[in-house]
Amino acid sequence: MVDKKQKKQLIFFSLAVLWGMLIFYLSSTPNLSSGLPSTYDLILRKTAHVVVFMVLTYLIASSFDSHNRRYLLFVIVVAVVYAFIDELHQVFVVTRSGNPTDIIIDSVGVYFGIWLYKHQPPNKLFKKFIK
Image (tube, rainbow, N blue to C red; front, top):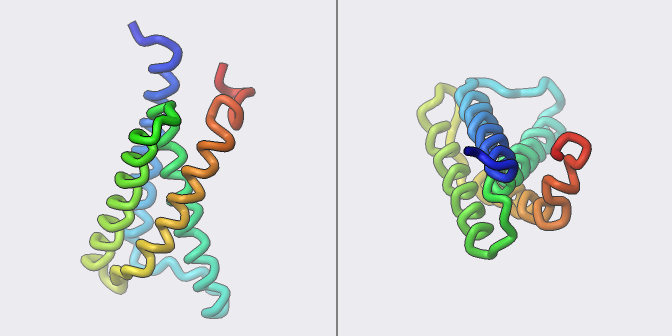
């Protein structure tokens, strides 16, 4: 029998997997240019890196539903390794290239994801939806 906590963990794990798949899909897209002038496009794309990895990290952390340091360290490692794999994947996409700097930018998103999880865990952030 699956209890309430396990059900929430499974939902967040499923959302993390789906979010990871979205990241993989977007990394497979040859051209993600916004059409804005190059400086604004660069800022938009790098901000998107931070945001998507913040969300991924938050979802992974929520799937463990623990503030234990070991779990959070594991979440950080998983998210940063995924950032590395994402950049490696882009090396094989036409017109894309892997950029080690993007891993650092993604890691900033990982930091914000952990910060958000610690300060606004799912039971606070989604209290209307999670009962």
